[in-house]
Image (cartoon, rainbow, N blue to C red; front, side, top):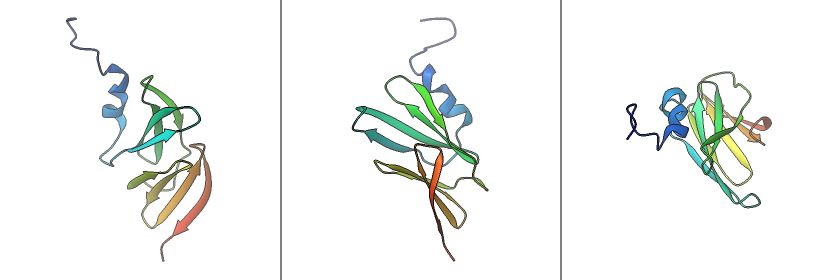
Length: 100
């Protein structure tokens, strides 16, 4: 084993260093046949390819810190306070849902 320790999970090191306490969301893309993990990083979220251990996309910023993440096969949903934003292609906000 190298002097610096194991490098088995070195590709996911950024997940532990920069993501916050918000639980991550998992997605599976049927067309690409690949899995992705979405994690909150402050006011944006990062999408990682699970097979290659690499970052795929960084979302646009939201007005406040992300408090919850969810994903389906088409969209990523990020909640900030009373606002829920739906993202397509990891960047474009396609819908806002606001609780009154």
